[in-house]
Length: 234
Image (cartoon, rainbow, N blue to C red; front, side, top):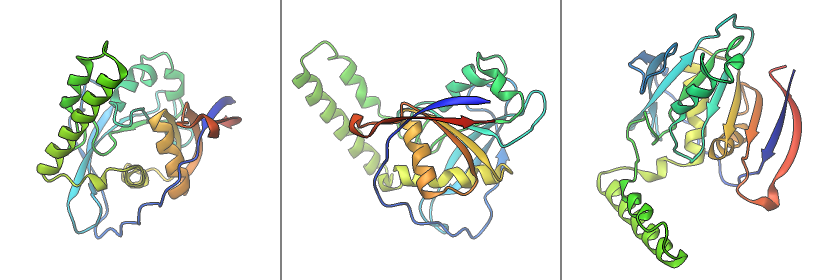
């Protein structure tokens, strides 16, 4: 039995509209986005907003249960939002310190829309300018940061990116689509920081199929943080 501490915060906002699919989403075999020994990787074409409109590409990596699959998979979400989720394989994969979690259930990683392994990738190299003034005053850093984000925004919009399709509700809507395409009907969710916020949004908007949730430092407002003990993967 696993006892997990949940650091939870609620996110307000309107859920994304459901996207009626004209064709089922499938996972196509593909090279892993980075070196992931033991993983089976693929790519999913998901609707950006509408089933008949543009699509986005998400990378997937599944680490099959190393002993025997006895329950729903464990799906990992990392922080940011937008950090490289595949880096978690070094912790939870076959040779990681938490590899025991992979013994009796599959471990699933997939890129959130806009993040590493997804197309389009919404990186902001302009933020390197912020690192250059790290030792400066708050006022200087904030001014450089605001300018860098503004230039990144303008570049992405100028390239035709629909930034309105890359919010929490939309990335939460990808979760059941991707997991269903991988052949799962139930899943456990684990998320840290921005990934915990994503897991909460999935619970709010798409609770079907969620067998359990573990949230690690998922609060952005201390006034709304609470600590809850619960059983996970029992």
